[in-house]
Length: 325
Image (cartoon, rainbow, N blue to C red; front, side, top):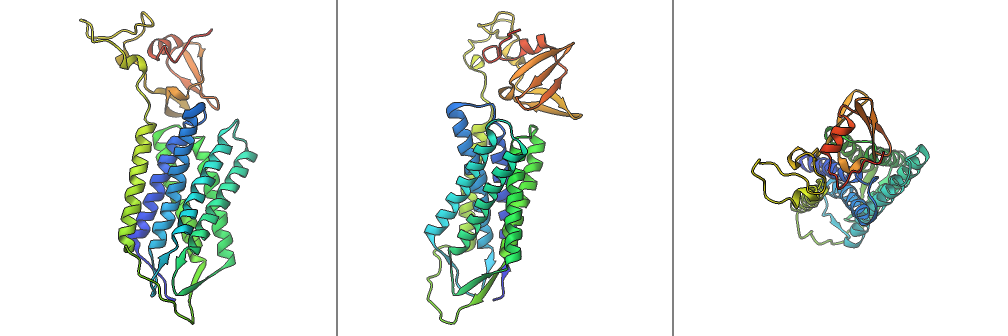
C-alpha cells in the first residue's frame, strides 16, 4: 500500500515530544535532594510527563499516517501502550535517582526504559485495525530499538546532570527529536500489505486532526500544571511576615539582623566549567567557605560562588539554612 504522512501532524508530534521532555526534565532534576512524599510526587509527575509525552508523540505520529483504507484503533491496546510508557519511564527514573548515578546503573536503567518504550510502540502498532497486514523489516526494527535505548539513556543522564534553564531547554529539544527519530524509524520498518478478504471497519468517531487536537490539549494542560507545581515555593517566613514597618523593610522575626525578605536569594549564582548557573536553594546540600568566596555542593557537584559565607548566611532563608561550623 502507498503510505503518506500529514506534515502538520508530524511537526505537532515532535512539539509534543519536546514539551513532554522539557517538563519531565524540570521535575526529574529536583528528585535527588528530595525525600518522602515530595520525592514520590516529583517522580510520578516526571514519569507521567516524559512517558505521557512519548506516548502522545507516538499516538499523534500514528494519526499522521494516511492509508487508502479506513484506520481504527483498539482502545484496550492503546491504553496498555500508554501505561507501558509511563511505567517504564517511572522505573528508569526511580533506578537512576537513588544513590550515585554510575555508568552501570545508567546503562541498566536506559536499557530497561528503552526496551519498554520500544514495546510500547509495537503494542500501539498492534492496536491498528484496518484492512491490511503489517510486515516489519528486521534491521529497521533493531535500529528503532537501539535509538529508543540511546534516547532513554540520554534522557536519564540529562535529568540528573542539568542545572540551568537554557541547558534544560536545549536538552529537551535534543531528547524530543531523539524520541521522534525512534518512532519514525520504527514506522519506516513497517510495510502495510492489503488483505485478500476485506472486513468492514466502522469509521472512527473523530477524524485524525480532531483526535490530535484533543491529545495535544491534554498534553499542554498536564505539562502546564506540572510546570506550575515545579516552581519554587516562597519562603514560609516571607509569607508569614507582618505588614511593612515605617522604614519599608521587613525583618525576619526568627533571626535578628538577617537581610530583609526582599533581599533574599531565590537563586544562587554559581560557576562550573566556565559557565554561570542559577542553582535552586532547594538543591543545595552544603556551603563551605573558601577564602572570601564559597564552594556550594548539591550532593553530586561542587560549584564556585563569588559570595562570602557571611553574605550567603544573611541572604538565605534561616529556616532552611543553618550554620553548623
